[in-house]
Length: 272
Ligand code: 2HA
Ligand code: ZN
Image (cartoon, rainbow, N blue to C red):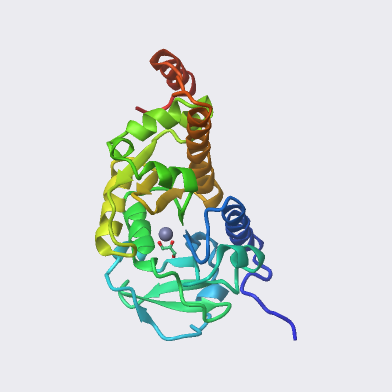
């Protein structure tokens, strides 16, 4: 039996899905994706061709639970609910699926390759994509993961204060501000998958953060593609590790000075 895939003869689309698989492997290797932890959703609409649009759905139209008007005609690749990142890394089309939005932007249907139901966080991921399109943002990827050291930081009131963690993380190593120039937004604890959490996440992105921390849970990051979203989380978590390493050596790290941060911001034309 040959395993046909919607990605066959679609190299540009396949390249995007390959990036998802590569990032899923990194998430597992870093210890950020225990069991089925984390989600990835990619807006793939720009790679959809007429032959794809003509394909029948392979399942019924499922209510999203909300109306997302910007998503008219949009297509997404989504990790499957309950699926493991480490399995997705090996076989993205058996552990995720391609869906399209139908019926006045209130439902989705699975088109390929297999009837893998999308992530339980689909309404929040799609709400974020709806927000990004409404803003005219070029961002097409959303990533949720559980980075150990960043999550540990959120167990302290001090680091949950607005931009306190951002300033510390930026000051650990110059790359962090250069490659995560909007810093780390903070969202207080809310029930996973809840509408409140989705709305608070969108408010934080709207304040101009690309990476939003969910207290005692994980991060939610958006960027042009999944690799860039991963890179932002990776540089932030690296800084948290440097902070912890210094503390473990018995001292409070000095951090780059305000003057050094300003010089960096000027040299790289960074915001804030
Ligand atoms: O989907 O990480 O927060 C698994 C999760 C939910
Ligand atoms: Zn999670």
